[in-house]
Amino acid sequence: MDALEALHTRVSVGRLGGEPPSGDVLEQICRAALRAPDHAMLRPWRFLRIAGEGRERLGDLFVEATRHDEPEASQAALNKAAGKPLRAPMIIVAIARKQPHDKVPEVEQVISAGAAVQNMLIACHALGVGAMWRTGGMAYHAIVEQGLGLDVGESIVGFLYAGEIEGRIKPVPELAVGDYFAEWPA
Image (tube, rainbow, N blue to C red; front, side, top):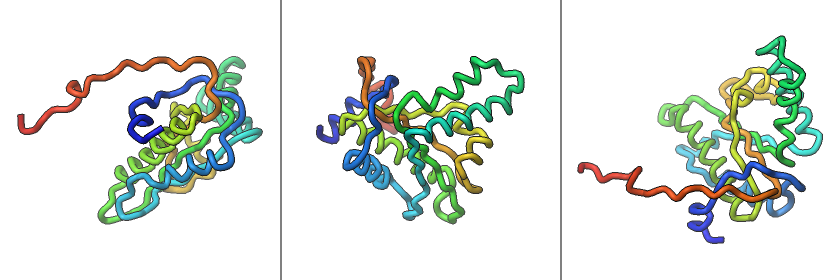
């Protein structure tokens, strides 16, 4: 698949299963992240790959965070929190590593980390791996950040769920370029 086809046809895949990406496929996905735009070459990102039992440990963090926020949470709510990381065989946690810099504001560093996630999404699609970028409250929760070992100045940009595509992929409507782009001055 060429680059433009990958960009034009990528969609999020919600139903993932099978084995996690590995070997050369995983290497290519990870290498794609490292080609994201990066003002001043700060490398303002790092990633945690979570598979196997690690997903259950992440689920435990989600349960702990849920209990913290809702001490009276139902067992169903706790089970739901525990099950979120089990929706795919692998999760890559994308972390923005914001650092002081006189020419690169923090927002650019977070956007760069986000671009790294987008590169991984495109690489997954090009390689036939299903993927979805998820966030939600757990991405911004102090208990989850602490449990994953984030340092001061770091924040989670998202959870990239990856695995084999299960079921059919929802068609995404074609968008008209003219609805979003205009010439300036008009």
